[in-house]
Image 1 (cartoon, rainbow, N blue to C red):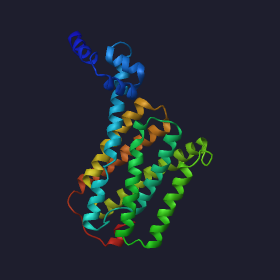
Image 2 (image 1 turned 180 degrees about the vertical axis):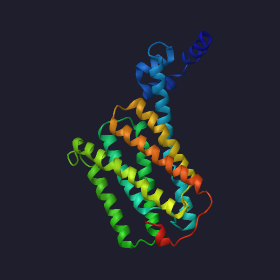
Image 3 (image 1 turned 30 degrees about the vertical axis):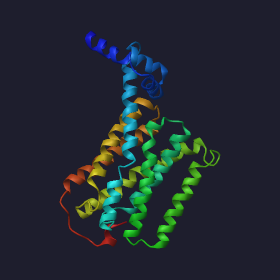
Amino acid sequence: MELIKALILAITSHLPAPAVAGLEMLVGDQCAATLTTLKGNLPACTSLLMSKVVGLGIVVFASIIKLPQIGKMLASQSAEGISLSGYVFETLGYFITLSYSIHHGFPFSTYGEVLFLAIQNVIVTMLVCVYSHAGHLSTFYIAVGFAGVGVALFGPQEMVSLHQLAYLQAFAAIPLSLTSKIPQLLQNHRQQSTGQLSALTVFSYLAGSAARVFTTLAEIDDALTLFGTAAAFLLNLGLAVQMIMYWAPGPKASMGKKTQ
């Protein structure tokens, strides 16, 4: 053990200034000093560093996580098996969660992926509208609805107070996030197929939601956020199980019946 400590100290004591500055930005001056000198609350600071690294990894990965889904839809010119209502609910939930996290000053590493997921969700939602022939009017209503919610949530704080945001997070964002997966789960079960769902996206979601539970426990003392991340993991697990169960293409149905 002493030999390992000596080796670590030999490395950390000679870190270049930019590396030390980056470490301080991630975990703060106190934990940076603890990690470089191995003096202080080392377990807590190590856990915080791991959480920061994992959190930033989730954010980076989230910026491309739905590109396979978008690419698959563009290549097939189809929205088969994609639940429109599920994506609308999920996107609205993302908007609320993003606003809640920003206004509460949470570290970006604990919620940053929500920003990128919301952007990609809007793209997928519009593609579903186009490929499912939902109609120009429906597409217009959805686009205006997204824009209106965005203005209300990300405008001046006086527009939506912290108290109101807490209620929205508890009684809108979390339920929306949870129910967004239910139409997709039911649709997959009914069709015995996952249609145009991307396996890479589904399993990436599962891994990301599991990692987010860890970072939430490590960095945020917020019961609402923890409950939301834990519930999201369970529902993503359900989708992953269905992806395995229905790996082979199921019986075909008409586009109108498959897309909600």
